[in-house]
Every structure is written in C-alpha cells, then in structure tokens.
Image (cartoon, rainbow, N blue to C red; front, side, top):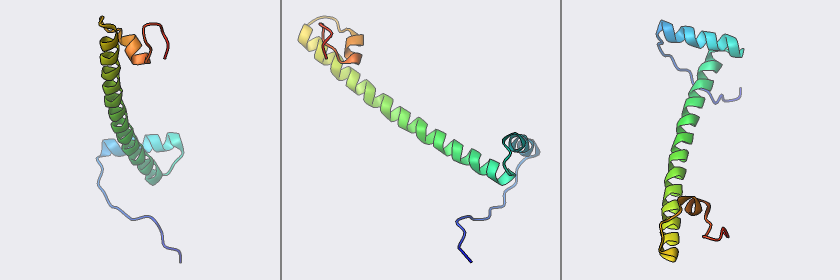
Length: 94
C-alpha cells in the first residue's frame, strides 16, 4: 500500500463557522475537507504575498529616495518625484 501524504486532524469548529464552510463547499462543489484545505492554503498564500509586497514596497522606496537624491544633486533644484520614480533626467532620457 502506498504511503499517503496526508495526516488526519480532529478539530472543533463553531456552528456559525461550520455553516459558512458548508455554504462555501456547496458553492464550490468541493468536499468539506477540500474546502477547508483550500481556504487554509489561500490564507497562507495571501499572507506570503503580503510579505513579498511589503518587501518590494520598501525596496521601491529606497530606490526612489536614491533617484531623488541623484536628481537633486545633479540639478541643484527641487526634485521632480515623477522623474525620480521613472528614472528619467530633466530631458526625459533614461
């Protein structure tokens, strides 16, 4: 017999949550177990993507600040943040 990659888990759920799961299960056509598993996977994926987005946003801000400093140093003028964001100089060249 092949070894299964699944474990059994017994949990208690409140009646309201179980009704919501069952409603979602009926709508999706999945089994109760599959519905719960899909939603758990989705929640972990969403959290992971939020973390990736936070990291990317921080990196973008650092790069924007670097470009803004560079534009300010070259021109001696107020920095055009659009230019800094787009990575262009005053003439619009990249």
